[in-house]
Length: 325
Image 1 (cartoon, rainbow, N blue to C red):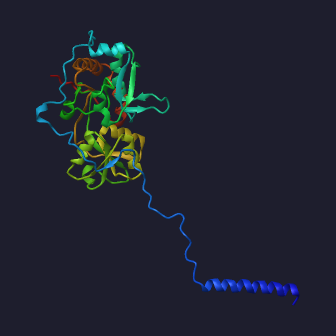
Image 2 (image 1 turned 90 degrees about the horizontal axis):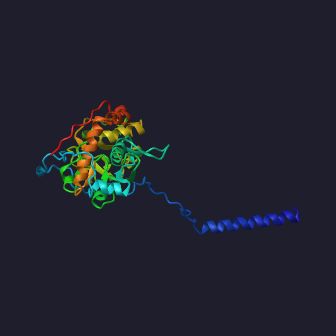
Image 3 (image 1 turned 30 degrees about the vertical axis):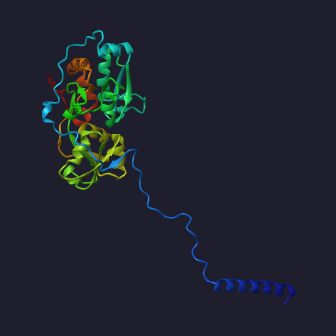
């Protein structure tokens, strides 16, 4: 063996001896886990609450009588010193609306404009005041903000799928009814659910401050209410499997079903939801004015607006008859 080979053999022997010595000192143990595995949960939308405390806002108050009875209209004159004259002086009608409810109040992604049945109602009021449907400053609000923005003077009126009931009448005024909806349930087609009775112990979504949320919480079948800010949040939760259903007015659900063909509306209507324009409590002259506008709207363009936005989803409809006191 040459000197070079003997030297290489000696080096290898020394290396093996060192390795055996280290092995004899005990195992080095498992390497540290620098990326520990954790269970991931899809985040909930901002302000979402599962099984929140809910005031029974929709409960019947026997002292209220018929909550849909509104002040009788007196025409569309705007006397000096009236609420309408002040709005005219300002030059713009401020309206609280939705921008997330397809068919009623939503932002058209192609144009950036707000569209839908409620937007058309707001435009009718602006047309009566200014002769221009575009003299409106829309303020996008959540269901929970509807009463607050009227009471603090942020807006002049709210047109946002707002059900008239006795509890709300203690805080604000309402116009006569311009649309009547009914609460139902939206589920995925593959779920097999046929109504709220099938959803015992299951999460069902509605917006905070809505009568729909109160109705879910009081349902005999015992669903678990999930409260969010906007109806679009409910649809995302349903698509992600974080809730089993959405329950609210059939008009709102019909818009969601058109947005997501994997969903459908099931079950019969189990409530009546009369929509009215919300108006500050002290502005009774504005209530009469809006009622005059709505009286004309029912006889003129109501049917065309309904046929454009609602008829394809819910079938034929006619304007509701007003009730006055």
